[in-house]
Image 1: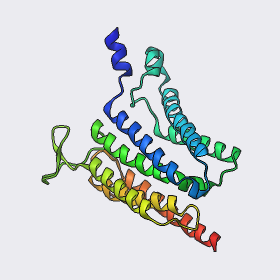
Image 2: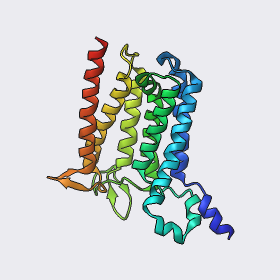
Image 3: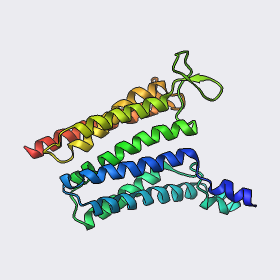
Length: 240
């Protein structure tokens, strides 16, 4: 019985990496929150509530889609197994909570997103490293000298590619001077991240191909990139 509970609640290594990324990202975001007109208390609260909504919403969404399985094993509902998670429900929950809190506190949307950008950037780095620790988001087989042994083959270290790209993006945005137009910092982060994922997806082996050789991740990256450029143009015109 003790072994069962130990396995049920023992935090995996990749989850620890994400927790560290969240902690560092929030600390860095706090340092620059006030320059965007956001109080540290509001930044901490909105991050905490959004994270809780992300975790709980992702779990509930997965459970609702797999009710028969959980009826057979109800204790698995409280397991910290990261596989019991549905990302779209998690993101939707976090976004809803973020908008509710922002509206109740009368926070400006684009300034809030700019203040949270260091947090998002560190989270992206942690996500790449957590995928490496878990062996997920793995790359195609390769004969290159920097390939890693994973799943009985030498593969492109796409997790490391993603972490390094996110680190470079964080460095560029951290050193960038503050834009007089709220929202440009966040949109630049989103555009650069989409661009990096567009290229990294070409080396991944676990992304489904859906149209004319294009991978699903690449399609999403193209859409996100186009949306970022459109919103940037709108922000610049509104500022003028």
